[in-house]
Image 1 (cartoon, rainbow, N blue to C red):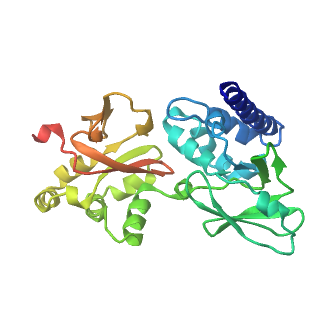
Image 2 (image 1 turned 180 degrees about the vertical axis):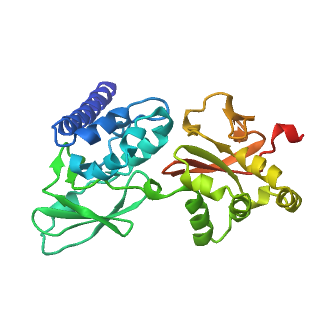
Image 3 (image 1 turned 180 degrees about the horizontal axis):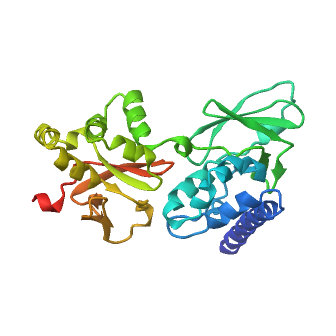
Length: 316
């Protein structure tokens, strides 16, 4: 029984390796050179290559490979080069995960084109995908009700569980066109619990909302409403200079990647002060004395949701 288990494990690893190698060969075919370059730069937080990690488990996968022309918008904005920077590793990982469905398209391929049955799944980021066959050679991909240009031609099987679908355009996550300030406003507009309304109001009062909108590389630590006391807010609104300093202390003029944080790191704010980012076992990541509650990627950087306001050291 042990020998049989070893043989089965070996065959499984061989099948995974073969599927991954087939995908790599397709990516290297010349038609997907931009995507291939992005894949080569994409890695897990632990440093493991992206493709290797997703093929470790024997699960069905559909990989949507955009042809080079599909990246024209990113090239024109020079954002493509930015995705290669270490500080944008989270963005690149998200973009690549967005192109992969955690399910095979076999059901879609086997149905007659005149049935046009819609097939629902999700990508590795959790976004909804609806796939349906329009003609014998055209498959359309609908991402969260935002229709993507049709995937032309039949998918390319790489194994029993994986296949590559050539597409006309790369599929964009919401953050690719979302700026920090817009995210805070939309988050509070479309959720039942307002989260950033107080901090957003302070940005407007301190004339810093345009600074946030126009930044090209920015990390913003946004305290939730409960983390900003009425007394603190009233005091800041009465002292414009203090309000400006307070807001600058919640910003970094670079992209801070929390997924790379393995030990205490000193962060430099726009104010010129320092705060500690500390990965603790019991409380998770602490930014100063504030607990990190989550993050949202946006086009120009990242927004971190924190539990409490960050008070400049010189105020104490």
